[in-house]
Amino acid sequence: MSQEASERLREVSVRVFGNRYRAELMWALASAGERGVCLGDFAAARNAPASVYQAPIRSLVEAGLAERLPRTPGERRRWYRRSDNDLLWQCLEGLLSCLAEQSVPVRVG
Image (cartoon, rainbow, N blue to C red):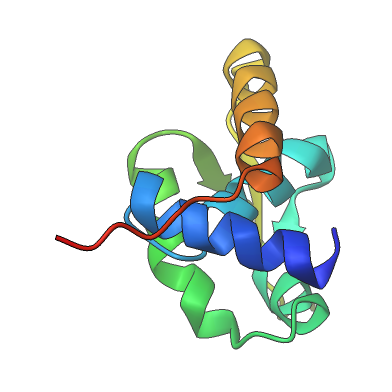
């Protein structure tokens, strides 16, 4: 995803999901499948601090949309993957893709 598309998705995410980084994290989970997402690696690839993804992943885990994977011996990184509801995640991926394409005007007042 281009930097411009990422920024558009972040603008939409804050309005639709109440968090600037939730939509891109959801998109990453939808795209990652079984292998999951390492928040530290994901943040580094996005030039963002990993801490901005902590609240969104916590919310997704609490909602049952994502799960925290057990650590493998010797591994310090923390991995998460989407829930097993493939139909839901296909729908979410389509929605997120559409949202990333849209420009959302800022409304004042």
